[in-house]
Amino acid sequence: MTKKRLKMFSDIRKKPSASNPNKVILQADRKLFAHMVLVAESRHLQMSDVLSHSLGPLPWALANGDGTLRKTNKAVLAKELEKQVLPAETIPGPSATIIDGMSLVQKMKGNDQTFSQRAASALTQILHEGARSQRIDVVFDVYQEDSIKNAERANRGCTTGIQFRNIAPGHRI
View 1 (cartoon, rainbow, N blue to C red):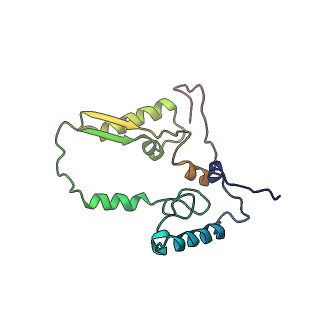
View 2: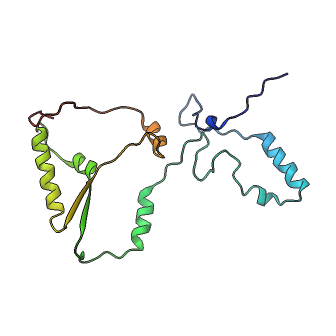
View 3: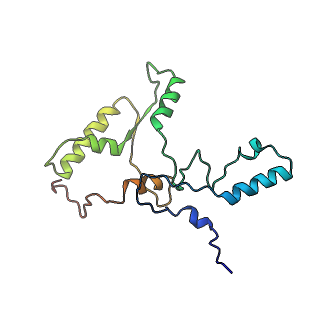
């Protein structure tokens, strides 16, 4: 008797290995397709209705052939949403300012500064941006272990940046 390699739910997450990482791995399951054709004919179903459903473990609109999530262009979505909103000439009070903290840190210049100098510079920029608001929120990214962004992190690689421990105000960056 031959050994069958049945697929499990955990196999969906496994990334297939390929000699060329840019090569998309697609395998058509002939037996599944043949079975679908037989069922459709025996039940007098239209093939267009049968083939309107996903044939893979994940919908092709959301995932690539190797099971990784499809990368989307958020800028296109943002532009479409902005088309539907008229810009306000004046912001009614009370208002709040929300600042992307990581973007602020990456835009800051100041080689050979100390952590204390960098923090004071960031605070000055934050207070300037939110001068007309009653509330200022600085929001930083949070990386959760189990996230929809794991596919993109796997594509970019798993490297850690410079990590500082026991940070003192006079420590140079």
